[in-house]
Length: 192
Image (cartoon, rainbow, N blue to C red):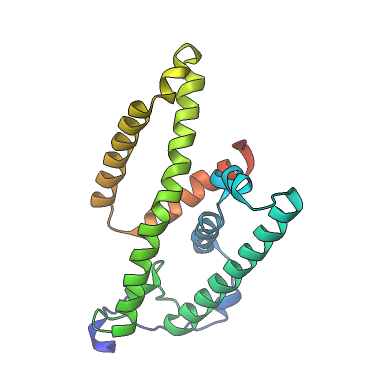
């Protein structure tokens, strides 16, 4: 599979202790981590739907789930860097050959993961936009409770998101921008 890869995606061992170095390129990692752990937009919904919900129970469940995510993300980053070194792409599956069966299975798994998680993320987006529209014009806030208006808004937002998905080819750009722009806002400024 090595010959299938472009030289910029082939394994490249760093010449120094790059694994522990921190610099400007490391900021893309920070953006990715900010995006990976943003779940605030559905926090209230998760709390309402948690069986026997109490703040302590939500904290315990959240800490357990985020702990598992930290371990999985850390192991993946470690393995990706130790396999491809400084040529590790922001979307690590790009570093694997298109003829690698296991990498293709992982690509299908990532696709299914995105398809399955999209409704959760879109639900939070739609609720936030409806709340914003209600507060922008309080006299017409009851109109946004109408199902057909929310459906029309959903179709409009889906059209915009689909158009962006067709134009943007690098998922790393999206992860970086969303993590950088929205991570701080969602974590620290946007109320629940």
